[in-house]
Image: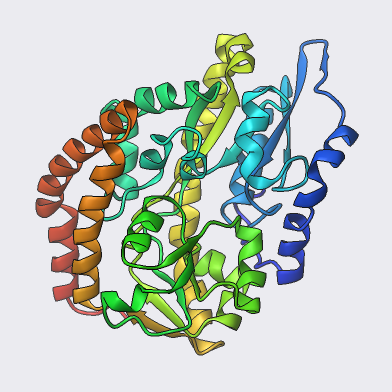
Amino acid sequence: MTKNKETKPLGRRDLLKGAAVGGVAAAASTAFPAPAISQGTMEWRMVTTWPKNFPGLGTGAELLAQMIGQMSDGRLNITVYGGGEIVPAFESIDAVGSGTVEMGHGAPYYWKGKVPATQFLASIPFGLTAQEQNAWFQFAGGQELADEAYSELNCKFFPSGNTGVQMGGWFNKEINSLEDYKGLKMRIPGLGGEVVAAAGATVVNLPGGEIPPALAQGTLDATEWVGPYNDLAFGLYQNAQYYYYPGWHEPAIVLDNFINLDAWNDLTPDLQAIIMAANTAVNQMVLSEFTARNNDSLQVLLDDHGVDVRPFPDDVLIGLGGLAKTVVAEIAAQDPLSTKVYDRIRAFREKALNWMTFSEQAYLRARALGPSWS
């Protein structure tokens, strides 16, 4: 990926093409050669949960591979595969942990069925912003807790991108009260999905590439994905009437780069440092890309496609917030590692809320009071 060129929205057919091959992934894996080590040069494979080169997510994985190759002067080269090219999207962590491939890229809540604590690392409803998440990982013990969780999957963890605040999702019915979630068939992963299920919805967990056809066929009544940049690329506006905000369920989503733990430990210290530095850079660059692209994409949705963008009513947000507090605490109490991760995030959230009252929140209020620059 070349960061100084604007990413063009992908065609819907192109996006779905890579994701549709999941059913033959097991057979296809034999067609890929094993990693090679020649004269100090290593060839690694990265499997992802994203359609190949999908804006911000798939291209973030490509950028990571490119940076590692360049920074290592070609000593470590990584080939990136989209979801379904080697293994189905949600089997990426198994392929990496088993050593079938060396590296993967996805989102931590995809692995909650294997290690429940991982979903708390991705995002918590009404939880940390992207800036706060990065601070938690880097300066409040988050990296160490994530490594503890991912070691159970035989993987090393790195934050490798962030979407920032997401949109609330696409709906084919109005959401005027919490009661409107009852009976709703909605694609929404992670802890946000648990909250929506508690509100009475039927929650469906699908990889990104499977969302558009499910919405088009009526298998889903609603879906969240990311935000305008990615939602426009998937063409979700074609099969949903209402676009709600804010993304209370995912105030910021951490993307994960996970590496087979044995492969990681076999690397020289300088290559480990290169991977760490590349992930730190990509983590920030992906967030910056979403910040830069979302508004333009939102304007296209509004101006060219007439999308009906609506805020969730305050009563709905209050109701969801109450459910989230109860549901998240109950899930965290189910195993010791989840409890530890949740307690550490909750404690940091309190500190962040206090400082944000005097900093970001106060500034945004002050800026809104000022004159328009347009």
